[in-house]
Length: 116
Image (tube, rainbow, N blue to C red; front, side, top):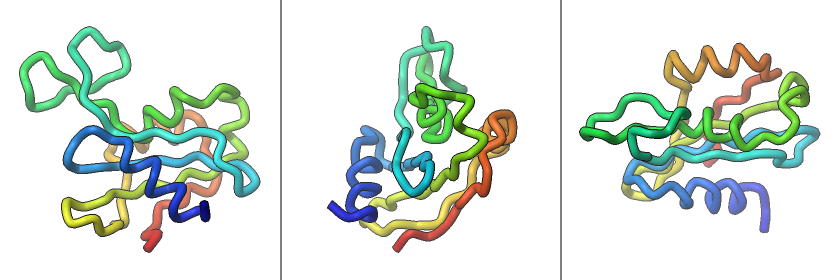
C-alpha cells in the first residue's frame, strides 16, 4: 500500500459524512493518526457539536491522543486533509482550537496540504 492509499484508508475510518484525517509522521513513517467522529456528552476529549448531547472529536485531537510518546511530537510533521462527499481529497486547515493544540505540542513543520 503506498502512502496516499494509506492516508485514504485512515480517512475512510471516519464514521461521519465530512471525513477529516490527521496523520502524524516522524522520519516519513506514520506514528499516529486520527479522524473526526462524534461521541456522547460524557467524553472529556470532545468539543461542542450541533446535535444535543453529542460532541465532535476533531482529527488533529484524535491523532495527538493516539500518540504514545508525546515528547516525540516536537520532531513530527502533521498532514491534515478532508475527503468530500464525492470522494475528492481537499486541502484542509485546522480550526482555531486545533491550531492551539498543535502549537501546544510544538509539532514541527506542520504540513497542511492538498494530497491529491
